[in-house]
Image (cartoon, rainbow, N blue to C red; front, side, top):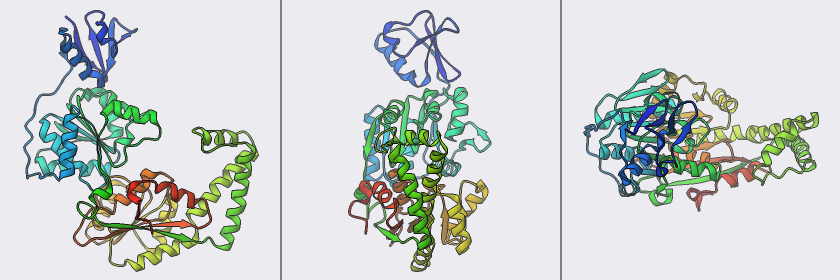
Length: 458
């Protein structure tokens, strides 16, 4: 009898050579007389066998239907209903690209309630895992499993970090029918993709405000692992209804005389080296070629140091600290998030103005305490580097200050999203501090290349 079983994050076919129509997924394993496939190809194999009336003893699944009843009514908004219908019509597989604050997590709750099957939700950070745990408990009223931060409790509804899911999936990959990937743009990475590849879940839902990946290859892999983008909603479609009205203010700040001299000198050293080595940063491998050239000589290493120094000066100019203070005074009494590109700048602002600082170094318990105090106004201002870029729910935030950041469009849209969650009478504003006459100006233009900024930048 031909059989299919789950083994260490893969599928094992036994019973002789598989028919040709299954060879697309099953490959001979030289270590034994079996054929093996990725766990994520489970539904493809089963459906193909069914279509060809091929007898197959399915020993893979380790789950059964569940009964998840909602603790409270869930009234989806039109865009959520549209996204759920599109996902259902795509065979219960696909990615929903909804803006931050548009209720992506409620879409997952609707999917779980619709399917009534065990579900695993994976998210990139401990903060998001805790947020998902609370949300699922509030809606379904049952114990929620957790695979994160040293916890290892497996239940029909379980939440996990990507890291923990990668470590555990070879053992639990056949325990869930639905896989929900929050901030799913992380999934195609060389490590995290294993979380989806080693799971048999036939039903898959990806959630992200910005699902586009760094390369077309990774975006194709995302579609292969989760399904196509089935729903896409822009911020402008929800502004003033689901999301808060907002504006974006670009604030040019000047370097001091000393900073300007050092910036110009460092940038000249860096740019001259780039020209001599004929590095083209517009090419896909431009940055890689620059790093290789820098590694080959003392001159190259000096050029790389100069590159870092001119970037640091632009990001941490003294005038930016003064500009932060002006914004804090202007919006006194409002809830403000201050974003930086690095921990050092975040801690400096914290020391300068006696403000709480949340970074990757902040311990989980202290992080939860900070966020709670921010939510209930005991901390009106919170300074962070990149920890709050993604997902964490802080609807009370009305003002964002981007002191520095990368050129990533995704990062900038995510930071904007932190202040867009609606609240009565709220009008959000995002300030972007840009060192004048530096490379930050072009970086600023690049990271605002998103529909969310169209007509919004003053």
